[in-house]
Amino acid sequence: FFFRVLFFFRHSNMSSAHAQLSDPPNVLHGSFPQHQQQSSCHETTHLEQEIPEMVEALEESFRTGVTKTREWRMKNLQDLQRLMIEGKEELLQALKQDLHKSELEGYITENNLIENELQDAMDHLDQWMKPDRVSTDLLNIPASSYIIPDPYGVALIMGAWNYPVQLSIMPLVGCIAAGNCAVIKVPSPKYSPASSETMARLLQKYMDPKFFRVVTGDRNMIAPLLEERWDLIFCTGSHHLGKIVATAAGRHLTPTVLELGGQNPCIVEQSASIELASKRIVWGSMMNSGQTCLRPEYVLVHEQIADQFVAAVKQKVDQFYSKDPQSSEWFGRIATPWACDRIDSILTQDKAHVVHGGVVVKEDKFVAPTILYYEDLSTFAASAAAKEEIFGPLMAVVKYSDLDPVLDYINHNEKPL
Image (cartoon, rainbow, N blue to C red; front, side, top):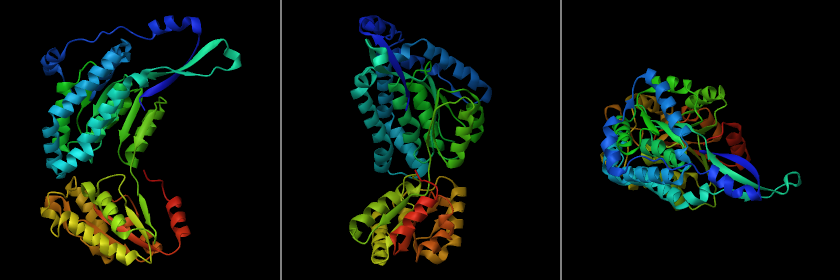
């Protein structure tokens, strides 16, 4: 995502000269101890008027050419790896505080994914940086043709609160590997205060401020950020935010990567293993208290096995989270009280379809893992649960008899993630 591709046509006799031109000198400054001593000079941007100066400083750093070197990329990947190793406990504690994620869930769904991404980038960096020789058309013979990956420049990374560590830091891995500078907008403190504060502090401590900056704050910081001209924007969020970002990016034809949500369907046919399907679907649907953009949101089950499937789902919910999920260390919390209100409204409107759970404790930001059961597709389509992405631990189970109307319904609606 953070590479642009340049096509170079060159005569074979020019290859050594081109290699010299494309390999800028290594001008990295300081070793690890020196880097740590400089950490007090890092600043987290809070004020809107600082953003243009911050972006200009990063553009100047990029123009030096140092980010194109292997040495720079490897060093900064290693710095980020140190952050993840030495900051592991702080990050996991912050996730527990914000979203009630257990240490195991926090590590598996956030930290470990970044660790693996870092190791993969370091293992394959030489291969990714290597020019790819391709065939040459008759018009350009006797030249040689290459595809050379080239960094974009200064990227804006906009993290999201539901997986705050993963969605803020993982895009930075590819950004560094491709040789870019970046501004990381950590999620709003209204949603994930502990995680955002911890990430901002650790990124300031471990990452070089000449090339990487952190922006904190709520949605009021989004508009001034999007006023700037970026070389690439990587944004995770809602469709509403995606439209705002795409509109702003369009003013400058800035390439964007938009990782948005949606209502994800899941179809269970009569030949499926009820035991296996119920286990996997409950795990994916209820993880992180349902605040996962890839979760199975509504499950379309063939009428021959629908009742058995619902019974199995109830059993799996109790097995995973006990009959008192509010006291379970393995079940998360909704990010904010007003998000609880929104989910509670859906439950109130669809209370006739609740067959398991349905409890909301706003003071604890707790919504019980809940199963809603609909007799047919038309009943579900008219329900509150079908109107928008739920983003909570509500699973809608819908009976069907004919697969064709089910596929028509799915294809007629907006494409999910």
